[in-house]
Length: 205
Ligand SMILES: NC(=O)c1ccc[n+]([C@@H]2O[C@H](COP(=O)([O-])OP(=O)(O)OC[C@H]3O[C@@H](n4cnc5c(N)ncnc54)[C@H](OP(=O)(O)O)[C@@H]3O)[C@@H](O)[C@H]2O)c1
Image 1 (spheres, helix red, strand yellow):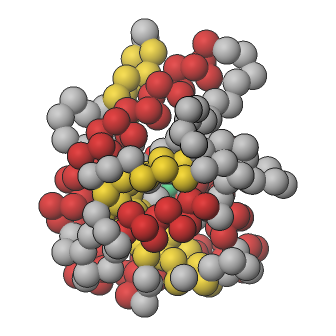
Image 2 (cartoon, rainbow, N blue to C red):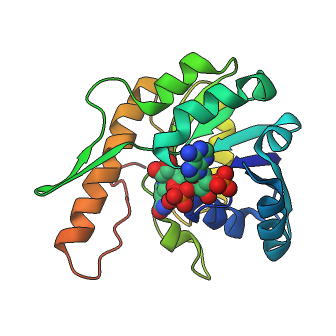
């Protein structure tokens, strides 16, 4: 599958590239094409300006910093056209008492779905970049929700990232819960020294 990772120069984007290279036709997108190409050379994949990266893609992964995701979706909507999109972001609020979900209402992914023309999925929020860059895929599950065919394509990608199972957790409104899980995991990591928590569902045959 040809996958464009918008913001693929970042921590999570590079972790995705680390796991997907050689399995998929990956192109790293950046606001700075030369930076995308430089990082692409290191990983043995292509690099391009975001708008060029998304044009030929079968799946666009929006992996920019969360507070830039909506504006980036708006800027690239024309170039993305009807191509399926996976939103991996989660808005967070860092406070004195801990990390909180950054949104109380609709999710980032739902807002992005209002902007782009094609189907939108959300997922992978529970997979830490630090887990994905290890030598072996992490022993954890991945959760994905949203519109088809974006959700199915995102599940295919997720299956190449982890050793656990990939679950379709329903319509895109469930992105509210998936995005919220990010702050849950960060609070666990904060309270347990040395923790790098991931998710595993039990009781599912
Ligand atoms: N880090 C994790 O473990 C993890 C795990 C699961 C999900 N996520 C999600 O993945 C997304 C990326 O996280 P990250 O840790 O990789 O973030 P990051 O390294 O801080 O940023 C990723 C990329 O975002 C782009 N960017 C930054 N500011 C921007 C702006 N104002 N406009 C457009 N693009 C901008 C940059 O690409 P260019 O400068 O090259 O354009 C940057 O390399 C977030 O939404 C996060 O919630 C992260």
